[in-house]
Length: 421
Image 1 (tube, rainbow, N blue to C red):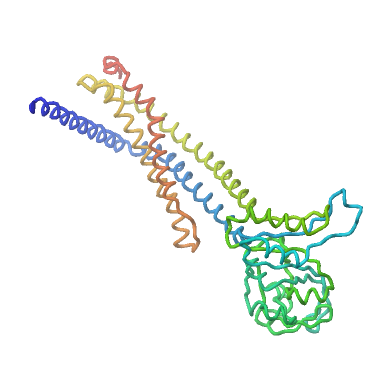
Image 2 (cartoon, one colour):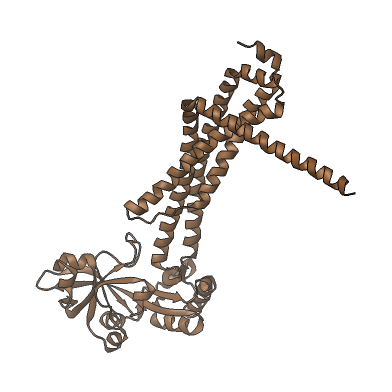
């Protein structure tokens, strides 16, 4: 019984060993063939190297662009909700009286909506100011609460932001945008402690600021803007209306539900027919992801075309190689080489060319982002997954476009091959 079991296992081991030796022989012959004509192999692999490098760089560019867009959005705040008055519906337009938002709406939302971390009203005032002994200038003045700094992620570049004590005491303090401070005082530090007059009311400059990202004028902050406490702005304007209300949430996952809740609270507190816009960055994030994915798909399509062109080049070269080596194929078949051995020999050569080009392209595709990080001081994401995928694709291209010439070589008649001159 033991001999009956051992004999098949021995034959199986010998079969595995024979297959291993055949594979090694085919691999050695493929390498020797490429060494015999290095220029042909190098030129054929060049197209694959370009395609593979393009594939990796496309993924790198896509990841970099996506990261940049998301960082810009996060600079505004992914957990931010803002509300503003949009006007009246057509049915209520005859009334002609605007029902604007007020700070009481903000307080009502903070009491009724769980998860609201901070909030701030924004009152826009286009006021005339006098800086020092200079001439008057029309400029945008924003009245906000101290929480506005964190809600809107304002960066204070010099001095400080006003606090709750300043707001409650009605202190006449102000912050200038960096561009306005440089324009009027020459530098940020020179602006601190200076006095400006807004509608003949003196304010002391306690800081300069900028937005965390460049919104290109698509926010309530302009290049030349002054921020003052909302309590002071309300007293100067004599109105309880505000232009916007900003809310920040503890949890970004609660944004959609909180947006709907804020919308219903504001609508319930105002006259029917008044229209209020309550928005967040969720839709913008979703659109950014879709745009980035579409952009990546288009770039990958171009990279795929390059790889296909490289694969066609491999197929053409292998076709020519089969034609030039017909006599060699006849000799190998005459001494006992099987069709599968001939097929694997030429298929191995095609795959080796593809992997050679893929390896060079992978090194280039990964090397460029790493070089930018080391020498250019730029954080460029390196996708190891894309490198692995690129190598797998290179191997697949070699097999796909090498199978036809290899199959043609395997089907050749040995007698006709030996007669070929």
